[in-house]
Length: 104
Image (cartoon, rainbow, N blue to C red):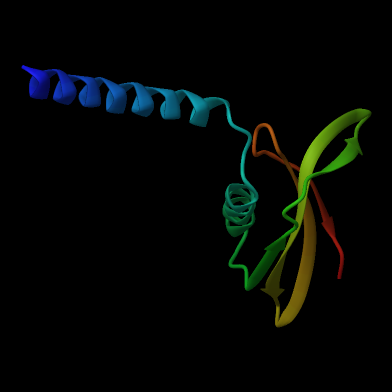
């Protein structure tokens, strides 16, 4: 009888842990890696990119009178044989690209 209770308790523990992890994932802020991936997907819609980077620490950014907590990163793309560099900001809460700037 004790073995059955132990197996049942372990099963319930695993189930509760799984459900808790799923709920936390839904409310967790986006990671820098996911932010970079989303930004690259957005830039790839207009052509291939050859390089990318992102700062791991979010910073406060003001755009259009609103304050955002955002990751800053950049991508490089080759356009007409010339490397073009773009800097971007990705919102930590939603993962949306909130601004892009051509730097070179």
